[in-house]
Image 1 (cartoon, helix red, strand yellow):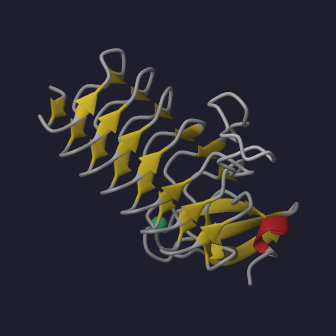
Image 2 (cartoon, rainbow, N blue to C red):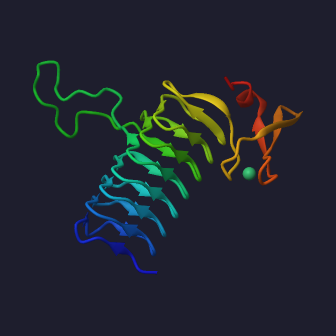
Length: 201
Ligand SMILES: [Zn+2]
């Protein structure tokens, strides 16, 4: 399937865009970025230098994916999700001289396959969001999120675990330090470490 790029968008010549991906109005994709197949970039999306994005990723309007952020296959980033990449944000040095592009450290962020980030959530740099995790809208995520965890609030805390289908999982049998969690909707079962399950608030 063809790549679709709206004429108002600016895509670097050496960026790689997978088949079937659509890039809507007023997007910018910078050099070295790699976007997989069948992705959808809404209006006003910014993809920074060398950012890696998997297949089947949906990025809603006005999301900036900064250098150091990686989105694996099937990630959903809702409107206005805010990524960061600088743990010590300063425009200037202590003598008020302006910082150059080289005198700060990038902190990497990894969002693993299938994870969903709600609208306007803020993702602190340097963390990993586990596969199929779900972040509630408006949350501020300051720590790693386990796979399948449902987190929300500021700071975001674990309020349950969700199935790949999105439904909240019920606690089943506990065996060998693992919870056999069951989806009431699609009947799937997911093994969640008991140490993670006990973090539910
Ligand atoms: Zn399910």
